[in-house]
Image (cartoon, rainbow, N blue to C red; front, side, top):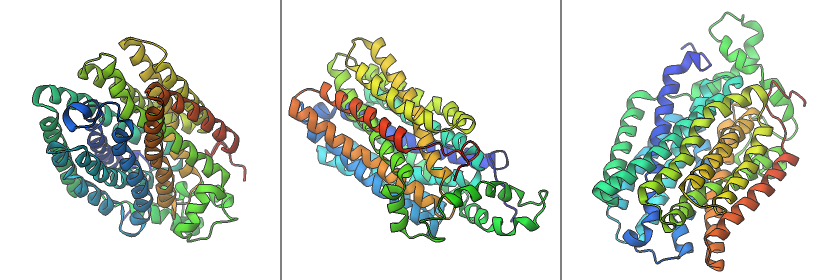
Length: 444
């Protein structure tokens, strides 16, 4: 089989993967507006029980983080498509459990399954897309992926708010969620290709490329390999040819200061999304906004986050990742704080829009930075470990937000905690991180 690399040569399959991640976003998005806002009235959570309320996001974050870690290694053994399909089968009971939940414990249990689903499916759409594209297209590839996913999150928030108004929250989520998941399983079976062969071919090609002319069918692999010499040189000290899971984990987590900086930034930026997921709906609902208007404010955040990644991912391919990542962290911190410093739907939408823009600056480009300095033989594991730390931020952030709000009795304190964390984490990223784009920074 002739293997070609790049967005243009694989556009049909990449579009299928974008459709998959859109469905992934719709699946998580169905829980983000209706469930927190109606936790007290429909799911039995006592008023101001912030720790209990945060439990479902804590469960989601811990499980998703672990599954991101597992998914990377699974995909290098089973293949990307099988892991993606397993993730969708796990999701089938989720809308049923929410639709017939008799207590908040059922919501927590459903989000455990949601964490497994998201860890397996979203990881695989990214890894498979990176298998097919060139190094110079990574920012754009991840930007498109995150765009599709978070547009799905935003659209689901609006659609479930409308369905909850028309049919009731349980019935709306049941119909919407089941339709999305069944469609995703069908499209995975009939439309998604296995891409592991593309990743394996990139590793084989450098050893034979000197005997292959630029006009041969595998010249795409040779082009992909042009950046491997720099990447390999960066890791020639400390990484074996076939690294173990423990070796990659320690490299990502603390042995390499750059990768550590990316991982801690990914973890802390999830504090923002945990805040939006848990606190924003209650904060805005208690401020007098209708459920539909709450949905719109939160969806502006998701739409700007998703839509802007079409540009911020590609921008990093031309001008680098590092500055976008650091400034994005600080913009998010400032705009989260602004949410509680003003009043009115216009102010709150503006704050949500700026937060979405900050997230778009950093979100695809932290992942791209990890991919820049990871070899294809263990890139799936590296991305999985980065995503483990990043999505563990949901759990740590949700617990911290719930604890601070509980101890102070004020939701506003959660906003201050997130803002401070983003400012400090951005500083750590600025100091320990570096520009990783292989065509911008080729220093060893």
